[in-house]
Length: 427
Image (cartoon, rainbow, N blue to C red; front, side, top):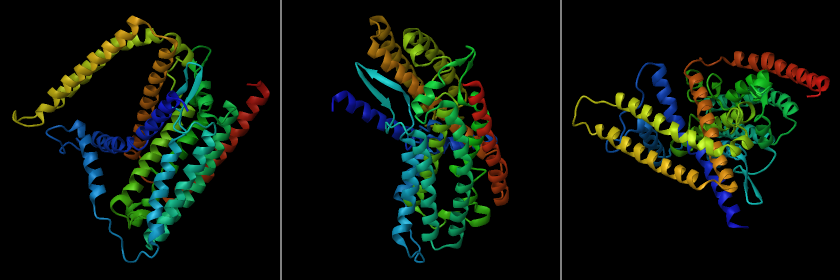
């Protein structure tokens, strides 16, 4: 095994950890800040380290430390201690493993070697997602049963019924997608979306399969147990649902697992329906061919974007007391942003001055595509948070009616329509 292969494997694993587990504190922060914006308030802004709040992000790390060091209390009524402890591990592990097959960039060529930019480089991406996405409900069921609590058991039964209802519609919606793309390999699916229709409209999945995209997004909300489908933990009806008896890090694994599952669902939505790691109108070949032009444009855009961000930050980070320790934050961040801009511009300028080799162009393409994937993933996660603070929770009967009477017939009809179009027009 050569050093290049080892390096690429390590980078892929680190990226998978950052986009899944590492995203959890950021998603918690986003949940609170977006809630504050929607409800016309500030959100978390008190917790700081030597005056540095980072927009409230420090609060997420403080909460994480609190969960780690909190007492792990276990009720005496719990008889199945092993299964009680196993349940959150199953939920967390299944959510994390789901993310491992998501492609962050196109296949990377270094010399004569090809490297897939996935945490787990396999070509069974969709099947892998469906297998592990459905596995998490076993953890919820075991946790509800082992808690020896009626509210926990009710929550776990609700979760099982919900997953059965919506995973069927999700699978059927994916059949239409597979007919369109002709592959279950996520890298091939993303590369299919790199082209354009008549040179104008990107051939993204949401354009080719709008109904399948809508069904999949709705069912992904249900799979991730997010509002308005969070009946498994409806606090107004069954206290805390399946995790009522959990505390400390065992509760933390449930909590983090939900956000990792949300990130994994967002990643698959981006991959299947929004072009994945591709920029609009710039597939991998086009980006590699025009990489020097792209880097030149980026060198112009970066200082401008940094200027507008700094201007916004200064306007929104003022305190009445001049001696307030938090006044240092803006000054230090401005210097840090200026230094980062200078380093990036010098580095990119040196690359353009000496010229890019083919390998360097391939690596630069991978970096741009990873950044594109991260940006799209962040936007999709924002949609998840936005919906939570917009729609009320469904009643149980409404949830089942939507799954079986609306989404399921639409998914089946979409399969017939897609198959007919493919057979008749041969596309």
